Length: 178
Image (tube, rainbow, N blue to C red; front, side):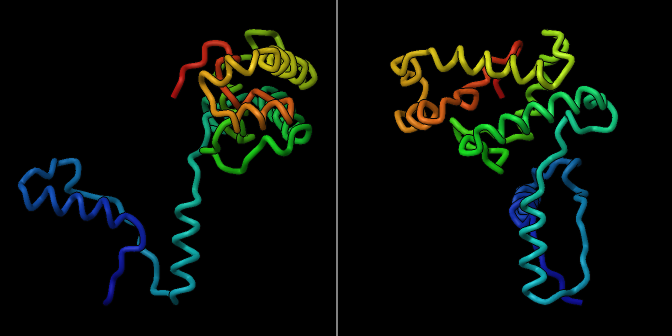
């Protein structure tokens, strides 16, 4: 039958190029693929969109090694509170640009930094209070300092919305830049 590559054509092209040069490593000789039944072009477009919208599962949400139910409740509740309080500063994209935050990325960063244990934040209200304190500290930073690491547009938007947590992750304890 007739087969079409829906996604991954660049990986296939790279493998073919390396094979032709005799440089294809053993670990690339077998590639996992997903096969779907033949479908109309509109179905192909929908499937491509769905495949490319997928986000990886975040550490906080892993069934094993992720956050406990109580930590999930505290972190998710506080993150939702911030998103509701500052809707203009949150984005649906995991790769949003400063000064915006993505709620899931915020949840994951809070979990990875272990902030609720380090600061004994046992309730959602405790974490909300702590987050507001961190934002207040960032708010007090003069624009001149922000402009050394951010554009004027970013600083202006953060200032107008009085929300600076999306400008940097440095407010989180032991944060490792990615």
